[in-house]
Image 1 (cartoon, rainbow, N blue to C red):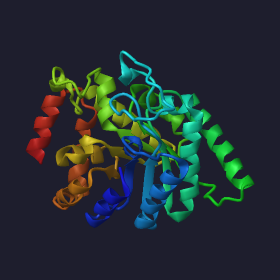
Image 2: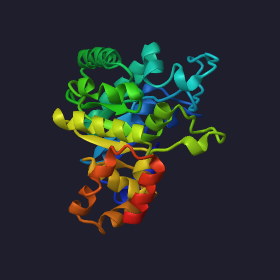
Image 3: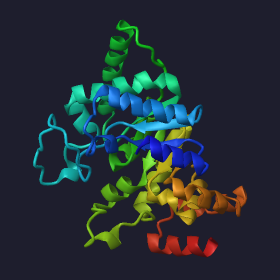
Image 4: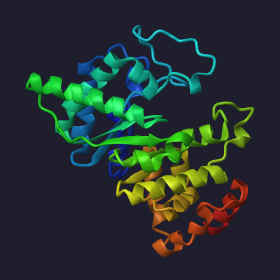
Length: 295
């Protein structure tokens, strides 16, 4: 969420930044203009040097409220299903283009990858690609340097994206599975609502099957796929995800050393033996018990 947190990640042994959440730059900040964003992105990229830095475009809305006079509140009754993330950015194109300009300008200072949140339709990717081309043309006209080949990837965090992952993989440079929202939207469970919290189950067979199909689509088209979210931060769950063919994980910095220590205990063969549980129809509770026993 900030350059300071990137320093902590580096100290903890991160092999890169799997998810830089730009909404935190907007929440409570007095200046969210192009220069302020550019300076923050540049600092993170220079800090990480040649390590990959995946920066997610503004994922505001829902439970992430940003104070911007140019973004009037819509007063939505169900904001989690409303104008948030990529929908908000595509509705507010000047705000979006400002961020894209800052990102592309910063791309010459490190190994930048751009990621789009909460896609449900490939048209959202096409519209973003068009805006990026517009920004590139503007930067070129002003002789502003930028990397012309910054990879553009997608978060797979809705059932719609997971079920059409084969189509999306034809144009995306990479996938990152957002396990928190994927679980929330698949099970229709508000993860912030204590009344239904027991129903939030990342190991539910529906969630596991969507992850398996997403990984298969990514591998068939030769693009990398990672997982970010709380699911990856649990050692036993991480091993199950690895058995599905996922080898890249984004977790909070303080979890890195613990998870690397977990990996040191198991051979790849042992981990791959969990594959039969990946898309098993068994309920999540039973899979969790099996994983804990294995662990």
